[in-house]
Length: 295
Image (cartoon, rainbow, N blue to C red; front, side, top):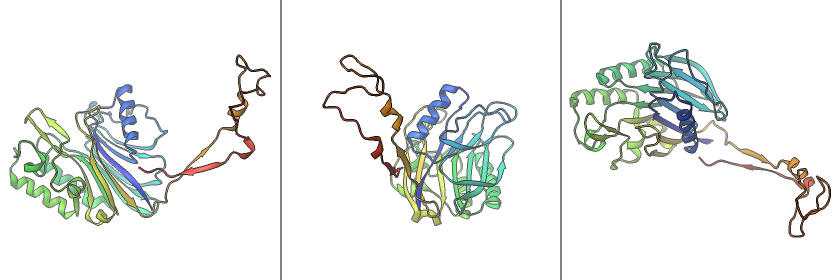
């Protein structure tokens, strides 16, 4: 078994090469294996060139009319993910993937809720997800609403009727979905976005997992504001069928033959005389070592 790190993040646009590079570097610094991104601003059919050296699998839901909205899911190259089916919203506000990680069935969902009318829209979207999902379910979402206003907002109240919030939480419960960060930090206050409209800090960015995954949950965290006006939210969890990943390092033996002539050294290139206190390792004894990355 091995751990995977899942990150959900509203990146507020990634169209400029400089911002894309900063986003990818930040995701790598988080050791993110599965990245669920909202508000990517990729127009459908016109996806910018994306690096494949770290994230080898990219899936997108883009908006056809303009560079706005957008949801992307990126999967790290060492995660053995096989896509079986997908559901892509034509307006670029949700993306569902169904597949296998090793031999484990999994559904990964990215959701970017609208700024208004979000409760009925979210309920309808989760109903669609309910009929689509299979296996382990992981949802990353900018919900555009704080589920528990007294502790998820500095305003300590919601502009939405509490009856609507209860209806949304009831729908989440019907999918056996729990707020991964809140279950790990039941009394803590932390926020993912500052709302200019409501002049308050709010926790509106979520990672949801099924209650059956609780024994496999290892860690959850809310990051810092970086690049976007939303913070990334991450979790690490055990996938039992995922083999422990090892990374092999091997010394580049050709470097031993790249000894340049320098002042004070005699001999030709490749056979320079070195000071007595400098030791060169015998290439015939070079060893290969394996390291296991700790996320």
